[in-house]
Image 1 (cartoon, rainbow, N blue to C red):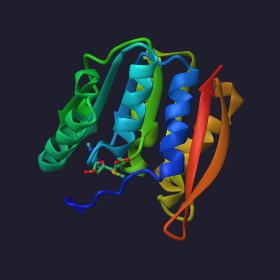
Image 2 (image 1 turned 30 degrees about the vertical axis):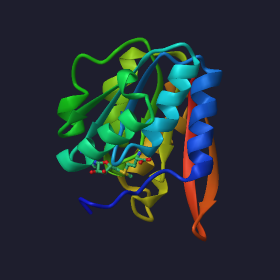
Image 3 (image 1 turned 180 degrees about the vertical axis):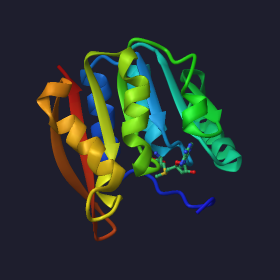
Length: 179
Ligand SMILES: C[S@@+](CC[C@H](N)C(=O)[O-])C[C@H]1O[C@@H](n2cnc3c(N)ncnc32)[C@H](O)[C@@H]1O
């Protein structure tokens, strides 16, 4: 899978842009850069919000290099820092705060761990968006625990789930706001 692009759908990308604009986001954290498609939607929103910082992370150095080139071509590279390596290390320190928006779009089983890692820096009214958490096994697996966490109002979130379509397939997305 090291060369696979796995980008967000165009509709979901457009939604990411709208979410980042409507929350006046200045600080965005992304798990899963790949070739940088979602990163471009989010960085474009930062640009239109007047600036900010997006920290994103990617395991595969070659993909990170392609994403960096795509961001340069889009004229958005000044807003984005790509950290190469495993998310549990790359996002463990020096994360801009308060965080306005988190996008989780990589290993589903890590979604809850990443959310808990970043949560102390996530502002009230901040948004957590994730892609395809439903793919983590029929019993929900670890991503099931992530969805259960966001669905429980006692944890301080309100969540909405939607699907978008691309190439004849449905893609599930979950969007939560911190109360
Ligand atoms: C679904 S793709 C991201 C697609 C991207 N958001 C887009 O719209 O173009 C997920 C990416 O996360 C990377 N990834 C998976 N597990 C990771 C980890 N533990 N740490 C960092 N990156 C990881 C994969 O190499 C893959 O490129």
